[in-house]
Image (cartoon, rainbow, N blue to C red; front, side, top):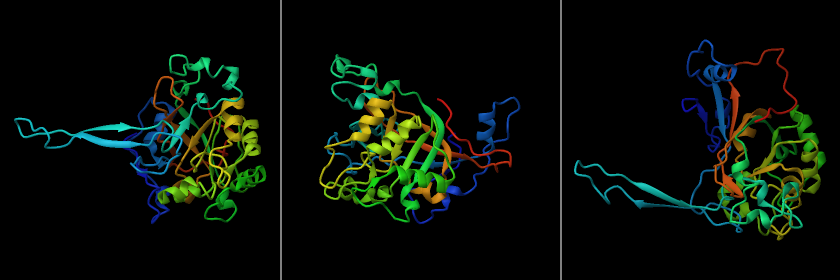
Length: 316
């Protein structure tokens, strides 16, 4: 899909760019399957991932992202005049836009399904619930733009997004959250990412769902849930990561993955409430999480009258 026209939601000067019709990439091939034909007919893409940069805001609980060049052009020049540069990166797996594996959180010494958290890490790797066990996602995505529904640029720090907020936002958008979906919750806080420390929200707190909102998602059987904040759920002003009940509900009790630090501004500006969601974690054996670059996809072909919006997600 490298030739597919791609929009860039990181450029706020043109919020309509995300919905600009894409030019078909190739003529449909006879005998191709339905998915390939849809891709060849034209797909719009919105990038939901943050650019990885040294010094970007992140949770203080994780090793920072670092990128350097051990070899630069000119450090070694071949006899024909050519040279090469190469890179080295170090990073925590919960830095930038990332996904939490089920091994990330335990409660009363247990991981999801009752696995013993201490025994599960013998050998230094979480074989049972590590990020390598997360299958690539190709699913129905749903955006719940809570900030937009409330008429806010962003929810206030420490604001708890309630069940009533989630239900009213879904109703206004005309979508139903169902089993297998990936639900992305926009608080608007992601627009503060470039502010650095303000995005982390130590003193102010950070908006997000609480335990009740997490239970609401779990009751609907979603496959994964994500948000535009650093910890997905509400962080109390001055409270940091002291209490994370939504992580317990989703990761430990329900086995639902969490995606954090998403860029949802372009998606909201484009007005996409329903789309195809694509995410592939790095295949790191036994890791508790992975940086990711999720995508929202939509066909450029007009929807026919008899194609009503679906109510729940596809499996992957």
